[in-house]
Image 1: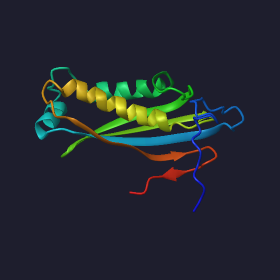
Image 2: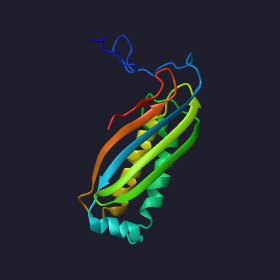
Image 3: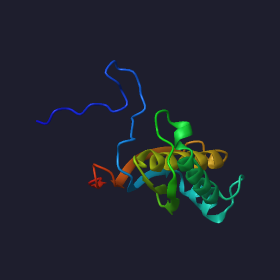
Image 4: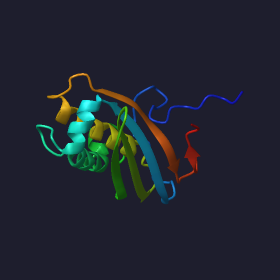
Length: 160
């Protein structure tokens, strides 16, 4: 059995710390995250038709997710500010809800997993905010990292 890995954001005394990435190589890094909002068919139809009280839900959520990716280091302690080279958020209406996928890329010394996860989370919260007047029971579910590449650990992809 392999030895357990140590937490990187905790020092020898157990205090939180920002990881020093100064010696790491700059590489192309990319991450993809996904999530799902479970909403009723009636709400999906309102979103599809642009008939919600607050306007274009998908456009607002897309922009909010991209903005959140760019501001991740302001939202999550100990993450590094990164110069993003790409951030996209796609929302797809389906039978059981609204699927969200974010893709984020950079050329940097650390990865963009947190930026992709933050983009999905904030896009989901934006949809929730925009449809709560018509449906109180929206559920935000299954936000997860799908794939990442770059850096010392290389490529990782979630198995189904």
